[in-house]
Amino acid sequence: MELIPAIDILERQVVRLHKGKYTEATVFSDDPIATSLHWESLGATRLHIIDLDGSSEGSPQNLDLIEKITSQLTIPIQLGGGIRSLESVTQAFQAGADRIIIGTKAIENPAFIEECIALFGNEKIIVAVDCQNGKVAVKGWKELTSTPASVLLKHMEQVGVLRFLVTDIERDGTLKGPNVDLIQQVNTNTKGKILAAGGMHKVADLQMLSSLNIDGAILGKALYSGTIDLTEALMIVN
Image (cartoon, rainbow, N blue to C red):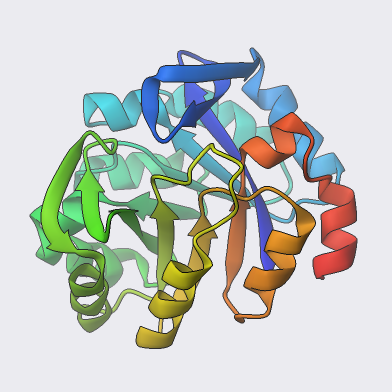
């Protein structure tokens, strides 16, 4: 299971939100480039970068910064946040992203995902399944749809999606531990590869998720607050 440090960018700073709320942002660094290089130096094999400004505005807002980050890293990044048009998909790849994460558009226009897969391949496209009480949230988690997560997963699998990012919004940034039941259910009911996010607190959480044979786990607040040491986690989990 790949352990992937998260870098959430808001107003050019590295922040962590609490349950996705922009009003509850904690700043951990004013230098996203240095933070990226730090996680790489500790052994990260990939970074998970979210443009929170982009999520809020509906289109990427920090592509120049992303390009500066990717130009200095030797490891790949997966990028999300406001990627809702073919133009923004192309721009994200041009900025150096190895994979892109699409959430809102998967609900609004499933054919868009199919088009992206046809153009770039299913290894390059991740669909975000952001869950709140079993339903999918969109537009930077600001709007809750009536679509069950299970329905989105099934539909996206049918159009060729290979990898899903599954987040329990109520756990995100809380350090309460991941929603193992949700991840297990999703992993059992889809042939796709699962990346789990939300609530990671200690290495034991990662060991539990690893036992489910999922593809990866996103580490955010646990790394920044020090409840998980990346080097130690990489040694134990892998």
